[in-house]
Length: 431
Image (cartoon, rainbow, N blue to C red; front, side, top):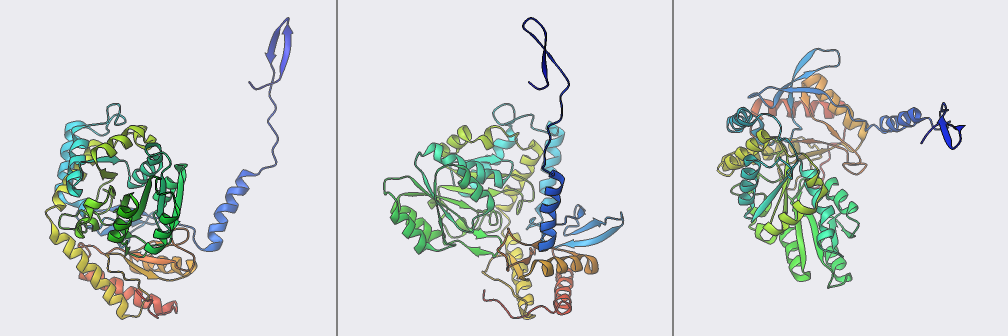
């Protein structure tokens, strides 16, 4: 109860006017300081207004701050295969909107479970050869909700997490309140040391990724599975940058390497190769049922709109039978890396589809990004700390089957010109 209380009669109190509490904290100044720090370090992020034109991606229209428009080519999108504009996906979404309307109407526990959600979960379970799958609104939420819930299901659980795991995995592990061990990136020997040091009877889980998105390197899946078998640990893999793009049917690197059956929980996204939105886990029926029943991130979140689920299901089903798209995508990535390497640009190449060009300075990275956009109509966002370590700031290009020879030529020529203009080092990094 606020206000000054005064007696108005026997046993009675009246509320008088309140006086604002005095404080010495200048909250606006604190916000100014926090934002200015990012500007000073050269890593303040600027977002631009883009309008994708259906059927014309990767071309888009940029609305400048002054209201004028400029045609641009997007080189940093995660719609890896162009499925965000595929007729199969759009038709499924239109049909679902006509049939059901816009929203799902609630959480999955109330009224948000529809035939579209169940169909999508069936497609995903089939994709990974698992008994079941569970949808979330994003892969970030899927990682966070699942990893933070597992210790409730396995008391005393120890999670062994790769040092370069995605922020969503780190957050889930941090929030779960259980024991955690961080092993050096892709260092199987270090992981073994950590496993050997812990109680053999304790429940264990190893969390890692199939493709690490900043350097584009692959996780040692088979070696980690061998350790998991030896030490009786569960396995959890993030296939976000691989689903739809690797494997005969797009099941990811685990499908390509015939290792999916050795992974207990597979995390994936519907917002990259599948061109829509959402995330999921695929696992045993009991595992999905337990996460569904215990994870607040699932229980208390409104489900995906039916149209989104319908579009995603159509995309997953289509890509199971479209290996040619995956082949064209890998070819495009290989060509771009080869051409940039030929100019001596510092490329990291681990054989995946991701093309990082290291600049090594946040100010220079931002300047390159701005010049590519302003002078050449090429849009690629700078990637700085904390997404990558300081000193490894970069531009990360994501070529796709819908980037044609003309777009590739313009990008390569622009990078060559600007690299010379900015007097940047052309010494190659080891891949």
